[in-house]
Amino acid sequence: MEKTHLHISENGIVHNIPYCKIRRLQAKRSYCLIYLDEWEVDFLLVPKDMKEVVEGELNNAERFVKIHRSHTINLEKVKHYHKSKRKVELSNGELLPVSDGQRTLFIEAFKQF
Image (cartoon, rainbow, N blue to C red; front, top):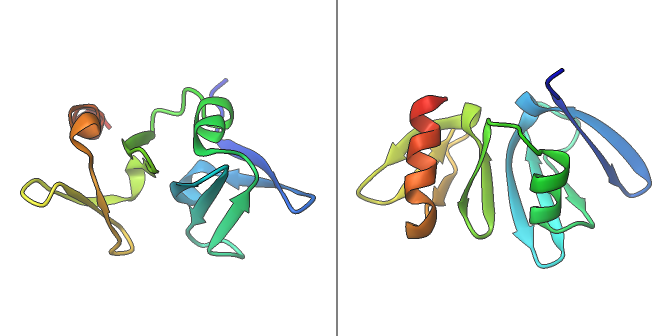
């Protein structure tokens, strides 16, 4: 059975967040910011690094792709990819950089999604 929710603890509360509500994840040293759409808060700050969240909690969730060492996005939330600027525009208008090392992986995942 495919996993569809992120179960993550923040400030002593375990959140059950549908993947479709997660816009992106951002690394902040040994913490991870999880930005949300249509949720009671705009983001959660969890005491895990992004790699731990992505590889542990979001493992095998094909909708999430790393685009930069500090950014992982939900492909459902991509509005545009600006090739010349090497930036992804998300559904809320945010522009995020796509690193050279992740560009090919992102483009392939974006095409297949």
